[in-house]
Length: 97
Image 1 (cartoon, rainbow, N blue to C red):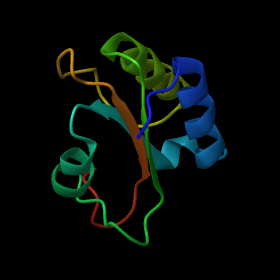
Image 2: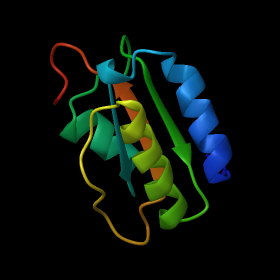
Image 3: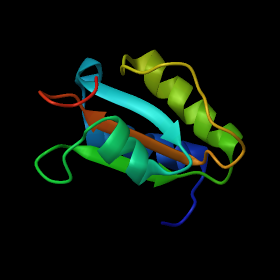
Image 4: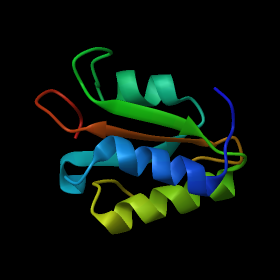
């Protein structure tokens, strides 16, 4: 995955989600695959999800905050300086949350 600007990452995720932000969870991670598939129990197929890489953790945190302001579910930022991935997934039966 190639890093991109916070603005581009934000626009790509918003375009992917559409308009039902409350039906989606947004977060940040340094290891997006573990976070999505293990921690959140997102199925690898049959569930809408998107992951994008920012240039740094500051950009990733700003994108996450912007998605939360739009109405996506999620919590306060965690992670460390390697937390450069922003992800969002459609909440469905079996995902956590």
